[in-house]
Length: 368
Image (cartoon, rainbow, N blue to C red; front, side, top):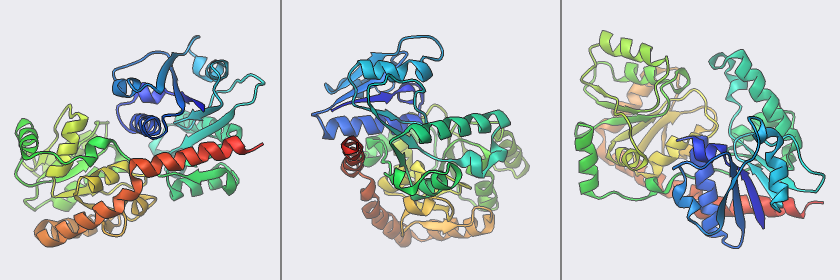
């Protein structure tokens, strides 16, 4: 089988959609070596360079101007002999040759529909238009959680039978145990305390970092935060200064994937009180790292966190405070939950994700 991908996010996004794209191509090419995987984009970048070394994976330079992704990519994939085209980030090309080709699109979330206040009017209208077009044009839609499937059916008016849930995995760096020397080196590089709780994700209102700060105010529990800063960060800084928490909160910069996976393993507790997610990949990363998790009881997060994570109302900082303190002060319970969660998270391992996605491909190709 020859499979084409819109690889814009594969090459350009450092996290989120980029990680999903790279991980999916890597595990498919590793598990199903009989296929060819064609990555279409304007240019290569260093991201995904190791995946391009796999003999089954080929970069194909996308020709044309600024709208080539919309108007040229589909036809170019067909010219290359692709039997199936997979849009990895909620979009599909708009133009195709009459020659039949099966189309699949992954939709990660419709948060802009549920929380429009976090998006500009232009972004909301553009996202909705693109997702509707992709959902209409696709032979099958992959949703990364049951929550996202429900939202696709509800907001995009798609028949439930057209949507298949395939959970995503995470980068293999989070599935490898680090040596004590590696962990010590990362701790020293960022000058971190012996114990801390960890928060990972873009520092924006939806991720709810301010609630974490309120939850630990007045305690001696150190917090390490890793994530891209937005204008919301000004509120975070203001709160930290007002409450004299400068020596309690760390913001390590330029953290690479290997260092991030070490931070997860160094942390006592991972805290993720997001208001809403399409899947919540940081929760999976924490579980693979053997770290106990406190996360929200909303959206897909219980799907990702499983039965042994602890859940809170993301609007209630006192609920969050109680759960953090409980795990911080109870070593045995923290270890028990981490060990049980490590068993649970194996449902998201590479082999299962690869088999589920390939089953979708094969099912679509059999349809007339």
